[in-house]
Image (tube, rainbow, N blue to C red; front, side):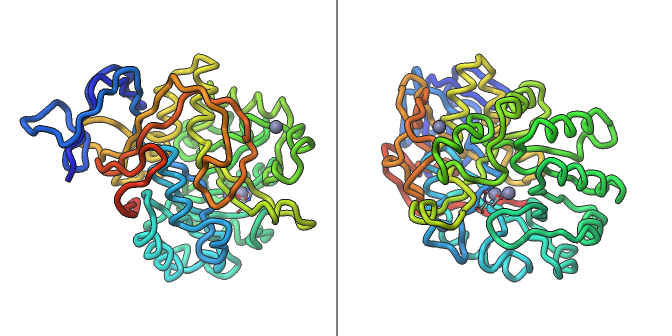
Length: 406
Ligand code: NCD
Ligand code: ZN
Ligand code: ZN
Ligand code: ZN
């Protein structure tokens, strides 16, 4: 294993922000330089070091839609952008409705994934026994509105059966549908954890804010928001057409403001991208394809806006890493730089100013709705378990992402 010392770097995680040396030994962060002489010494002066981000909402499209993305291309894109862990969604072909199909996905990822992985389980019309028995997942995903894939579930009796299992449920539920789901979840005793994916409306943030005031519910409900709902409105949809078409749709300036208020007061727990690639040809076709890519623009966009707003970079790290690992009770990663934590992390140069350019991205999706957005800072290199995996547009080593444990 490689021993790496990064000297004099600004080390930022959810719990600290200070200039120090970062030492990676045996795949872990170590406290102080040991007797070992490092294999690699890097001058971190003027640079920043963050724990690897987790994107808890991606669609890497495997199996079934590998022409849009696959576990190798998606996870490499992730690593190149400081995202060392991800949760992938079940709307693949076939959808992840059985433990056997989940095991197939994990086996594929074990072979192909460059980043650490978790897979959501899918709620289907007839897989209650599978949901009951499944383990090793962040949760069960329930689609309650129309979106990509045919997983929408209208039958409220099925919602009840699932809530009554008392397990973690993640919802695609918009506005009034989310309100109805919360009502039913509470009627069923609010036994398990309820997570709202890709919040987009003021009313969703306000409902979650009020629920979190109830001490009985506070630790049981969480909410994620994606950069596109923090940066764009329906005006972008009108301007850019299909390339700004996703579910939930881009909303109003007032909804966007509500997202940032939720970030400021802690109502929003963490960020996700909902990386949902479709090809350019699909987007330009007569048919509607909901979804946009995002995993590679995730950290730099949020970083840029946090700096502009004068928000704390520790909070940024918490909301792109530690909070998410904690919320889903991930056992083998914590998103911190502390002694003994797994050495997934990345070096960031805050002095570089660049605009987003799709030609420089690694996803199979060869476009981005954020084309031309000015960024503050740029990723320098990414490490996974203390091994250099990406630097200067080059990938190093092999696909060695690990299964996240729950
Ligand atoms: C997602 C997709 O394409 O899989 N699309 C989207 O517009 N967000 C599905 C989803 O997350 O709803
Ligand atoms: Zn969704
Ligand atoms: Zn725009
Ligand atoms: Zn999604």
